[in-house]
Length: 110
Length: 110
Image 1: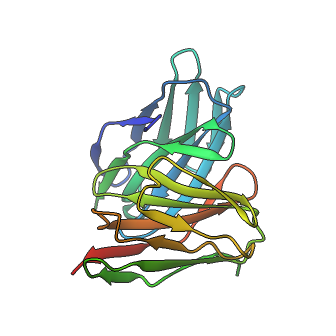
Image 2: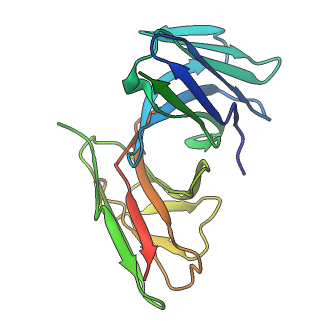
């Protein structure tokens, strides 16, 4: 069963705008990860945030984690056409096993 | 460059036929995984292996089989018992938490 659930399902923004997507999960976690998937390709790991961290940055990405609300958000700043992809959150309810949400599809318009 | 190679990229199966999807990694990772992805959905875990000669069922193992005779290789067989095999299959490996993915095999029914 899917542990994480992303919101919204789809997002369309203008190039240069920020994109924000959210992930909610059900059980306690050790860490939460975000992945990107371009159409027809495999997933690429973007960032990992541990359960004792509240915020993490990587380039134009900012991830927050609120374990009391069992939720995380991914912010992509100054979006580019190359950011067009699906974004998935993944949690680790069991060692080594990740549980993925259904993803948020982001379209960046030129 | 290190990475994960999945082959073939496209595969067609006839009724009653078993097919094998290849997954090879040169990242020296101990753990390997097989996922199934259906349109608009997240990834569902089929099988995973944390060490050579050992593997465990994931959430949707019925109709699938795997082997792990070498650290580098984790082939997946889709048997005739899997009644709805049409999907995008992704292989991944990991050393710790982040998973590295191949570019997938798209399996269709003839």
